[in-house]
Image (cartoon, one colour):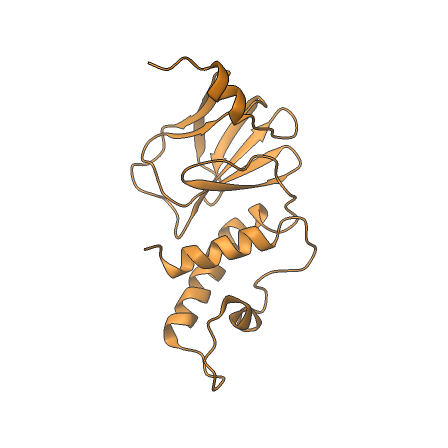
Length: 169
């Protein structure tokens, strides 16, 4: 089962793009929306831990949420996406190890870095996918690691092209 703070991150990520309202600046108000408040109005310790974890994550990664726009790139087995202009934010929920691949990304990627630390990430791209390589074997951030990929233009994905054109072995 997914860590509760990862679920809370997904809620924030899916709720915020394209909206101007601030998320989690007053964490206690978000408890009701996240379904973490008891009927008697008290807040369970586990709920406080979840909110503190997501709040700490937001301190490091808020650029991937605040001011983010709806993103045409949507398909991945282990990540979801937001974008701001030509920056594609890859929110890796399930860390794949030293290489993370996004299929069907048609927009050229100019550079990439881990958002929280600023560490550079190697990028290799062909017409079927982009591979982010040289990543740590274990996720460097929790509950979700974000890669910020600077694209040549608005990020676009076409996974149907990959299915039709890529030869199967």
